[in-house]
Length: 419
Image 1 (cartoon, rainbow, N blue to C red):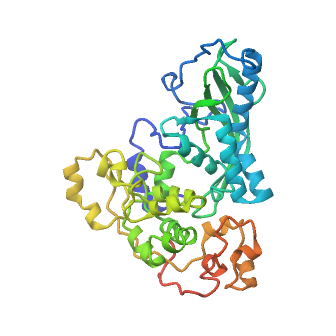
Image 2 (cartoon, rainbow, N blue to C red; image 1 turned 180 degrees about the vertical axis):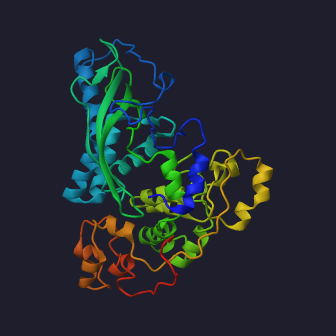
Image 3 (cartoon, rainbow, N blue to C red; image 1 turned 45 degrees about the vertical axis):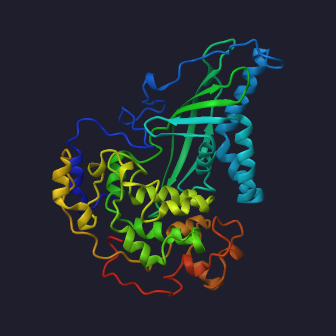
């Protein structure tokens, strides 16, 4: 997927002695990676603890308590498939309600999930982010084909009275690039998770996890494919913002307004995935806005409280996008910041971002439909009449997904190579 403009960039990155780590990207030491390899050091994992007891019935019987704890851990591992099943049977609203009830029943109110070199989510944020594990809610970005703890690989660290479960979870994942529609995988590897339970009870109190190796792009792959906002990232973020953030929730007056404001933003924060004042960060909140638009649509604004400049570690030095507005990318600012090399090479900004294009991400959200077939129903038809279970607001029209096919616009860029 490399193109000529990136060759200098890649050569600069290659001089680094050690591979960089990236949010949500567990880069293994082995090449090729071994199936069971995770890289989080011993210092990351919690110290095993035991119940302080004596416990009350029925959990005064350690075998009963461990069985209940294991059942809750396995229910959490199965969450992506359970969400998809509820969506298929009764729709997204039902799935959201049932999933929230399930997670609240198997975890403590202040549950914390700590993912190695990523972030930690607690309470309601923990619940919210679990929806992204489901292909029904993440727009098709990735899909678990398998996620299970095989016999003998979910082990309590001591017995009796252990409150700590060490789980090696077999994960098979298929990934779809939401900008290009390219599908990769499935890949199979091991996710390691350590569960700590509340005292004398089966609810999960904390989860420490290291994401399966190979499940997400490596840092350098992510930088190459997202740093310059190529492959239609700005267009897809903006068009989907207008699809999911309807009416007063829309942060931009129209598609061209959004593209004009977002094209000046960095594509990615150099060492961190989905962070900073970037298109990358806003893409995350676009996924979250699918099921919680009131909260997350404002996060895609030009000035965002959660995608802020200071959220990229290192400040200006953390932004390595070469297609920025001159004010953001002025050479003297880099000199004043004393950013360590390699600095991003100078490159001519994208001359044109084509806004007259069919919406790949929206079509994926609607179940992978294609415009050529969809427009036969009529461009003013609501997509929900063709696909009642489509992961889109019910008032979205086919012409919003297929403006080019519906001849609602005319391409204006000379070349689509860099859209």
